[in-house]
Image (cartoon, rainbow, N blue to C red; front, top):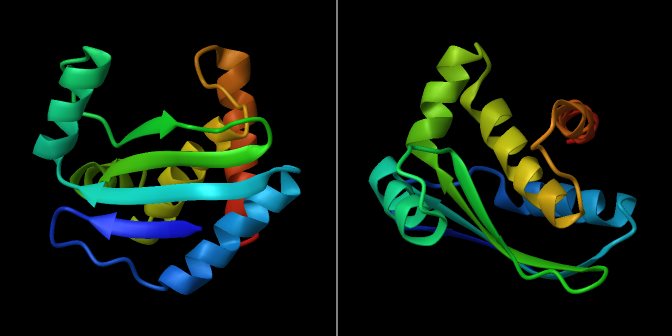
Length: 135
């Protein structure tokens, strides 16, 4: 089950279509869907979480809490819609393109992809682009 929640005034467009797309990503990665929650919030909310849970005193666009067990994908993905707006301007892409990238990025972490090393970042970006083309 994929759920979309908000703690700010954001409303996700085409939620059913996005849910089906994310489920296809999970299937393509040979995983199964457990419980996946996307929580949309503002910078202040996500900054507090970043400090409290990760001891990082910085703004971020996404924080994910992975509850995956084996091939069953589960977790909570918190997304700052304010950061997505700023990033979409910085990267000169639409808000929805950047939002979908962040959404699939969080999911790909649950599928086992990392982004700490340069090689990992290259693979992560390639996977993001691959799945963004399949929306």
